[in-house]
Length: 184
Image 1 (tube, rainbow, N blue to C red):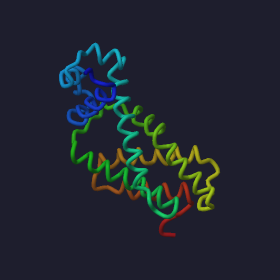
Image 2 (tube, helix red, strand yellow):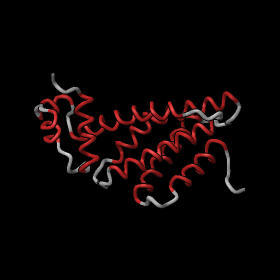
Image 3 (tube, one colour):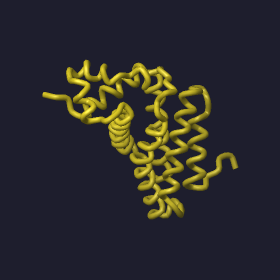
Image 4 (cartoon, rainbow, N blue to C red):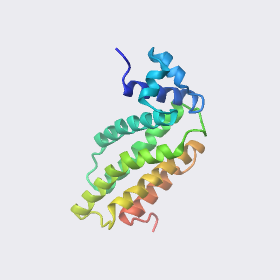
């Protein structure tokens, strides 16, 4: 039975994690799945599109997992749980796959995060508005900012694992969605 689009993308993602985007090769995916490169290129017109699909597949799975963890009683606490889960996953990922590859297309990760995670955050903000917990005038834009803050903070975490990226991101998210200023 031929490999599915998802299987191809998953295999490519594992290669990217192991060797980095630049060194991960379509030929290696074909060899691992016992298919031709032509089969891969019929489904994905370029290596970038293959990478985009791999990141989207991971992000959808990650979103479902994160949503299952959101049990806090308030919306703000659920948003904080989502941010904490993202950082815990990033830390695990960085320790399991320490390869740092600056050639990875960051705009793809940004786009996928905006498509997959921003709607989840927007839904939480709208829920908080409906319950009277939050008073966010533009949930869509605010959610986009929350995701951008998280994405950049995870990049900072990769560069400086001992730094304060998580605390800084949580503080910024709290200020943005609830007007909560820490320490004052």
